[in-house]
Image (tube, rainbow, N blue to C red; front, side, top):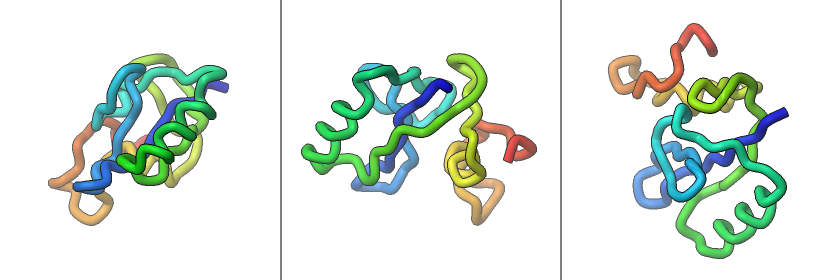
Length: 95
């Protein structure tokens, strides 16, 4: 099963997705993480700039990822408190 890397921006709390070279706020930009995933997570934890970096399972294809857990689908769709703040990177019917 494919995995992608997610975390939160320390300064703002924004949900971030690793795109292979930097961070994006859209899951559609996320890159599939291979064997280097655990080493990448360890380096991010040591740098203390990204909160809770974690590799998550997804289904779909690059540009059209769908997290396998409800928690991660909610994180991918944007804030859960006000619909007008949602980023729209994942349709709420996917949750």
